[in-house]
Length: 418
Ligand code: NIG
Ligand code: FE
Image 1 (spheres, rainbow, N blue to C red):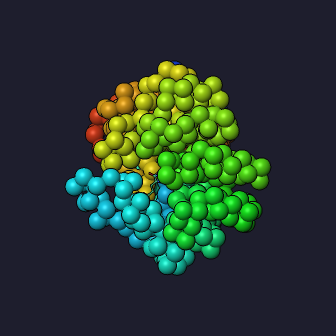
Image 2 (image 1 turned 180 degrees about the vertical axis):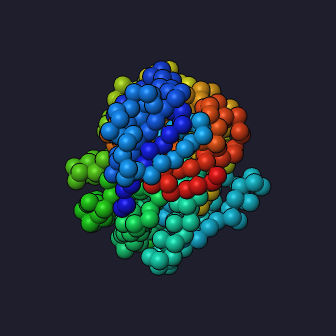
Image 3 (image 1 turned 90 degrees about the vertical axis):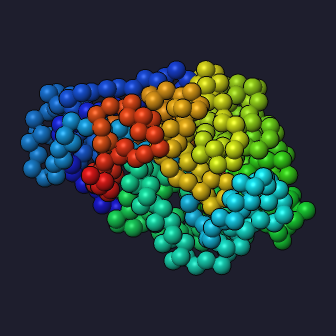
């Protein structure tokens, strides 16, 4: 992937700092520089700080493109650490059924929901999947996203799960890719119709065939740990096997009912537990203790008309909270970073500083990349979102609207909304 040299002048900076997740009250600590300069060499930040303090040999470089930010604010490129980006078909009818009172789980139990996207994904060829994902990726890039996690999970058979993971690799290999995709294997997203009533046998198949087959193609292994889907025992069995094979772990936990997914994530020292709308107080406490990132997905709660996850409880317990979109064709057909910010600040009681940390450094930690992206400091990737405005408070204030003017990935301007 092309990496560039870029000097951003006449810019302000607001960024969390560090190479690991910020936990609890540390999430509110944002480093501000008013008269700043950012120098990116070969895709990596060489300098981000006071313009006056920048070494002359960097400012004098003639091989750098220059961007005058006009006094605007630069923040780290956003990390959307939970999406289901690769899928066939759409499910608009289900959404309208839900508007009339149908529930997400009852649609799924009738053979719709995830299974309906599985049917469409199994028949979609690789080009169709890639072209469709690329369209969503361009929209993400316009909203400042420079890293995105993408899950498989709409194949539920080896050939289709592989096609989804190969699509991710193909998109990453494109020279003009505007962001980095981190792959997650989610073969345990639902029990496929061929295995109806035989959940344990399907878990056996994943453990014996799919996990070994996809080693190296996905960094993470995830599971929909939910009542009547994969309950605690099957989840524990599958995730332990995945960890032994070298996968890092994620869980869809306590999304629909309180099941103990958060406690399991803590027990297994998963990298993140996600959703957590119905997490128990004990689950919050154990996740904080175990250092599991709580990835909260407010767009899903909003679209399902469910209560928002208890962000304040997590932060007060000393947990690292990340925010992500959950973009998928079912529970949450939205990848809106602006609406995520608005819901976090207006409905979940998060401050704008905590929200920024959750979408940058902590999102990076949730995908195992906090040492290379998620903040504006020397040594990190040149991943930057320049806002139209000069102050962080515009992020929630411009409600549900895109504040991003330019997105920079590896030192390249990859989206320009100016
Ligand atoms: O994160 N809950 C499980 N998985 C997704 C929804 C997938 C779908 O409905 O297609 C979620 O909400
Ligand atoms: Fe999800």
